[in-house]
Image 1 (cartoon, rainbow, N blue to C red):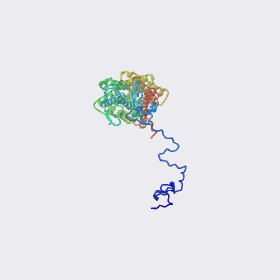
Image 2 (cartoon, rainbow, N blue to C red):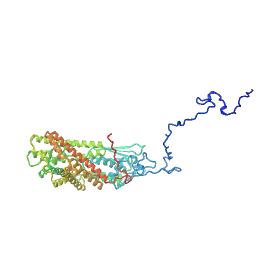
Image 3 (tube, rainbow, N blue to C red):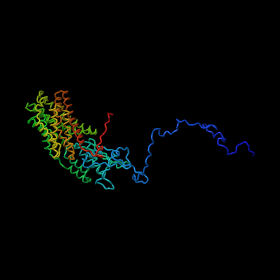
Image 4 (cartoon, helix red, strand yellow):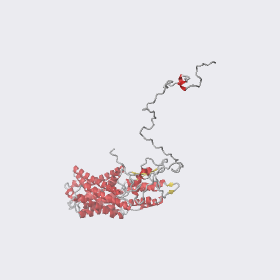
Length: 570
């Protein structure tokens, strides 16, 4: 076939002179042949929505990660990661591959401080415990037995009146000493529980124990503190720990029941001297208090609740005071009744409840304070019943008037001796160890001297004067307990006895019985203020004592004991 001589040769000539085979080869946005492409505007730069904005520097490339089964830094061709130390390691948001540096918790510090430091750490920052005796190296510790031992120790501490914070610290210390790392103890007023999780992928093991009976025995409390110290510091095996706990449970109380009754009488007699009573008032208050103590023992043996035990215990002192008032004897009946109230006011439970509230254990604190409220109502019912009967028999009982109760109150030497005798009797009632009685008695005398100097010499309001004196009691008690590696309760509880608001409570009850409700409410509010001042002062003194003690931590200047942050009101 003949070809066109003017047609270009196929495959020759420039590309722009070649014609497309069809119109489909043209794009709608392609310029026609011979028209050059327009230049792009300078202010338009098509970028991705994930591109880095102008002005920001790109991040450094991430370092190559090693295998999960190879120790960091040992893989050839990889740069070992820098090892964080000090506060830098603790401030990382995630655990670094090489782990967290060990925290030095010296065993020379009391176990309360060491375990409190551990409890306030996040779980991921706690150092790995050193496993002691009680299990094979291959199988690890006997978890059920360790949890059972921990709960039994916590039960004795909580039943003895120890604060929830120290109970949790003791439980955590025992479990941690036997190699249980991921363990979380929980303490409420009547329930103890502890949960242990071997790893993040294993099911947790949880055990609990209910505290059904509570009794005051500071001798047993001190023995349990010593056992926890031996477990956390000396490495007792599980068998040795169980044997020591069994011996503590078998030990009898250091004082018999008749000695407790005599101590109750001495306490009331000494308290009556604090409010202006003489020798006859001392004897009358002691007799009334001992009768009330025997009635309370009888009610307890019959299985009556503690509320009714306080009701019957408050009646005999009030009855003795009313009897002396009706006989018109030269006895200050108000001082007799006030002395009897000193032996009944639950100062120990009040201090423990306020301490739990200030340290963040609000459920336990609410339960303890509710218990205090019920016991005080029992005292009110017992005293008011007797006062009402006495006022019905003789409406003009002058010996019961509050104005006549404090006639010879300012006798410093007599009051100081009475305060120390009151603290001594309180030590016997609390079943304290004999070597702690002298320190607690001296602490009580110092508390009364400070209160008297502030309230009667300097003229300070009784509430702040009571708080300052109680603060010194808490300070000295905490220092003594750290010196002897023991609980602070034996050195503190008996020493606050002279500061209890017995007279203010009695004046409020008397005004209620006489029908003077405004005056009665004023006196009871003052009594509540004094009681709270005692509790807050003791707790503040204990916290001030910790300022002088080096808390164990990462370093000398580490954070140590962590506290909760304030919520700013919301």
